[in-house]
Every structure is written in C-alpha cells, then in structure tokens.
Length: 176
Image (cartoon, rainbow, N blue to C red; front, side, top):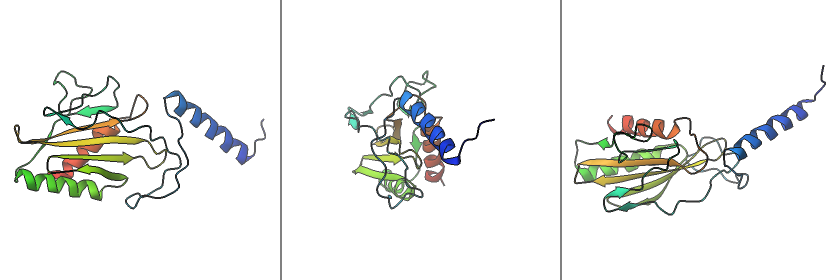
C-alpha cells in the first residue's frame, strides 16, 4: 500500500488537472488577484485567452460560430443543431426590452459588460473556478423584432453545454 501524504495527493491531483486543461488548449495566464464585484467566488486560475477580434455586428449579423461545439448562436442555420439557439423574443418596446436585458446581465454572477449601446451588448462571463472566459453578444435586430444572441468559449473544445445553459437562463429571466 502507498503511504502518500495529503500534500502529495493534492500535488498529483493539481498536476493532472493542469495537464488535462493544457491538453484542451488552455494555458494559465496568472492566478487571480482580485475579485469581481459580481463574482461569488474568485477564480483560482485565469484561463482567459485573448479577446476575439471578430466580435460585433456586420451587416446585421453576429460572427458565425467556429466548428467547435462550445458556441451557440441564434443566427446559426436551423440545420446546425449543435450551434443553433432561438433568439430572445420580446413583447414590450424594443428599447425597453434591451434595457431589461442589460439589467439582467448586470445582475448575473461573473459577468462584466464590456460594450453596450442602443443596439448591441457585449459581455464577458468568467467561470468561478478556472477563470475561463466566454464572450456573449446580443444584437437588437429590429428587422426581425428579436434580440439575436451569440455565446462562445474562447478556449478549448467542449464547454459541457455552459453557453447554451447561460442563454436559456437569460431567456428565463428575460421573459419572467
């Protein structure tokens, strides 16, 4: 039988976890040094990656999802079940709906609004434990009378459904 101290067990667990995360494409940027005012738990690591340079609206469209399964978009083709998600629908005025959406995002844990105007909102969501960052965009599509949404992980392949769950959580608060 092995006689391992608790410190050795934790070291081995930490090393294995770090190796798996690096294999998935993540690299620890740094240990977290501050706690976001909205965060319930500070990130132990920061696997934030680089902010994408393809964010925003171009000709009425958010950027398409990459081929990896860690992204959802209301503007993905209906045949693309892996990425497709319904846009947010509203019954109030478009302006009031977008203001309400911003209020929801501001109240969510680990969310930070980076850019917001009358038709576009971009927020970063940081996971509590490992500091992974997801880029979430909303576009007030007045032609279709809906709010288009795109939520994508910056790093890795799988997000274990986190982006889809987040959009559905926002939808439930939005329509409440």
